[in-house]
Amino acid sequence: MEVASALVRRCREGGLSEPERDRALQAFERDLRSLFVVEVTASVNRKSISLLKRHPLRAADALQLASCLELAQQLQRGVRFVAFDSRLHRAAADEGLDVLT
Image (cartoon, rainbow, N blue to C red):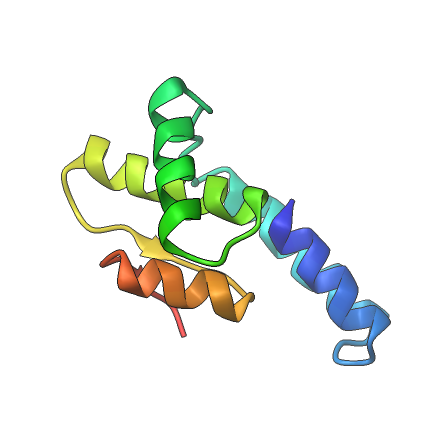
């Protein structure tokens, strides 16, 4: 939902035309088929709380970051993190994730 929200916001603010927004949203829907889904578990919640203590994040952002850290732990390999929010971007980098810039 975060990606869709960012694309719609960019369009509303004039950074994307409506056709560009719609193409990006369609591409995102196609890409969703290849993404991992991380369930919100007790472990993810604990990670979120820990992240909130270390970084100036909103709750949803901490949950997103905690989910990525959980996935990296489950896969036992690096996971690329994507975010438009600068605080979330910085926190992910500080946590050692490969952040897409």
